[in-house]
Length: 193
Image (tube, rainbow, N blue to C red; front, side, top):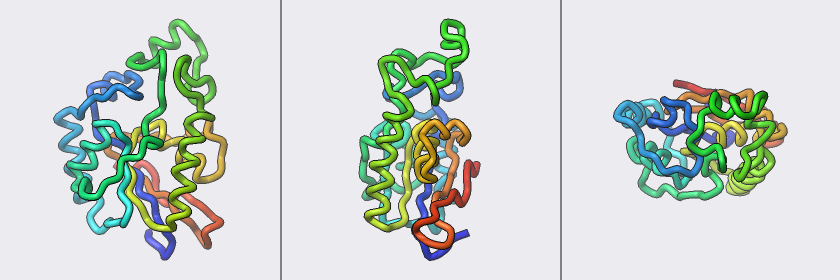
C-alpha cells in the first residue's frame, strides 16, 4: 500500500463516554473509557512500521491519550488547528436531541450555533494541509472524527461539507496520500478498524 510519496496517517481517538452516548464532543476535555484505552494500546501493533518524522495531535485529552497509549507521545507536537469541531450551543447534545428542536439539521451543512461552520473547520484543515505539503514528509495525526472528515474532504480539494461522506469509527486509522504525483491527492485507506 505504500509508495514513494508522503503518507498521512490519520488516527481517530479511542472511545469516550460521550462517543458511546452520541453526545457532540468538541472542546469538552473528556478522557477515554477503559475500552477506549484498550483500543488505543492496540493501535501500537496496527501502526507498527509507521514511524513518520512528524507526529501531531489535537490538544484534546482524548487525542493526546490515544497518541500516548499507541506509543507515539515522544516528540508529539500539539496543533490547535487539529481540535475537533467547535459545537458551540450543541456541545454535549446528541443529534437526536437537536433534531427535536431543529428538524432537518445537519452539522456539515448547518454548522453549530455559537460554534463553527463547515467553512470554519475547512479553513483549519487547509492550514494543516498547507503545512504538511510544505514539509513534504509523512506524518501521523491524532484527532477527532468530524475534523478528520473535513480534513479528508479538503485533502481531495472537495468542499468541507463533503466530509459528511466519510464515516470514522473510534481508534480507526485512515491514510491520505498521492497516486502518480504530488498533484494527485488520494485517500489510500479509510476507517481501518
